[in-house]
Image 1 (cartoon, one colour):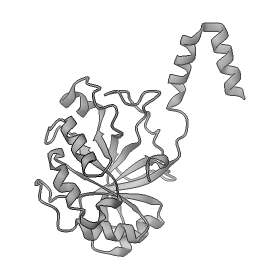
Image 2: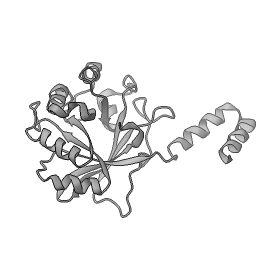
Image 3: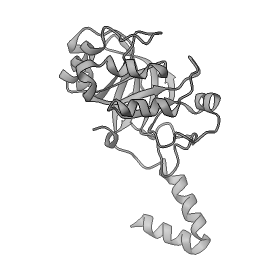
Image 4: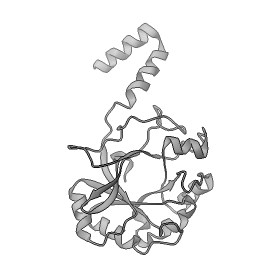
Length: 232
């Protein structure tokens, strides 16, 4: 009720423009129901590791599904996806080279239909821009495409283009180090920066990578928050 009173006051005092600014300033402060997720390219052979991660509250496991530096399917992909699923986690995949999307999805084998998404990784290393053919190619394989990138990397590789704003954004604004005491997943932290047509009032990111190389039960992983509503 208080929000409605504030909105009416703004409209009466300053017009519709003020209403838009009000929404723009407060959108990123509204809590989004979020879940914790991990991504990793490391070998994990113990099913109990996934069970512990799930018990710790990690709902999603994102695997690098080709052998690092190649487009060849990684020999551990299917085994690790199965262990994650058996532990009650959701799964997804990515490849550092976005040109390897076909092999990266095929590497999931019988678990392809369980993939929540495939992330096209747009980074300055290896420096391959995303193309509409990549996005459409992922869709054609029956998997949802996501773009993983950060504001600086995107601008270096894609400039100010907003041609891919229709693809959900997995944002990165990560730092190295341990998780702070009492950490809880929150897609709104750190505050989103607008770029590429994303992180606007109508097109917020669906996820954000927050910590690099966190040691979780002896394995280095990256820690993320995902909007619960994005996951199937």
